[in-house]
Length: 96
Image 1 (cartoon, rainbow, N blue to C red):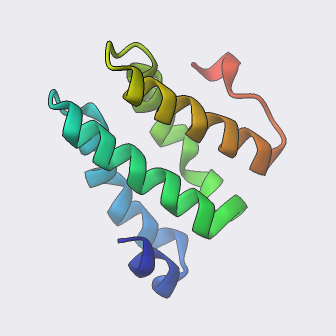
Image 2 (image 1 turned 90 degrees about the vertical axis):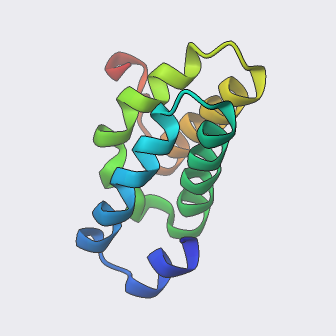
Image 3 (image 1 turned 90 degrees about the horizontal axis):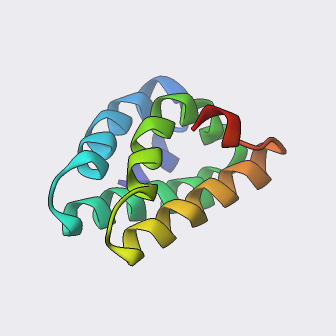
């Protein structure tokens, strides 16, 4: 999926990936949350600041992950938020 996002290189196509990624992060199964968060982290690392435009759609799911009981999910969500904040130079705390 990350390679696909890099290959298409356009925001309008990334939105097609965004929906399933949000679904994974919102899933009741921890493994699915980890997959969704891992995909998002990988895409942020690969696409950088360009992907930050999708963060408004992702923040509610990330916020829910911060409340998860599983510490791995919380840690991944915090890492993603930190990376995205560093990429755009803005804190997301007021949006969560």
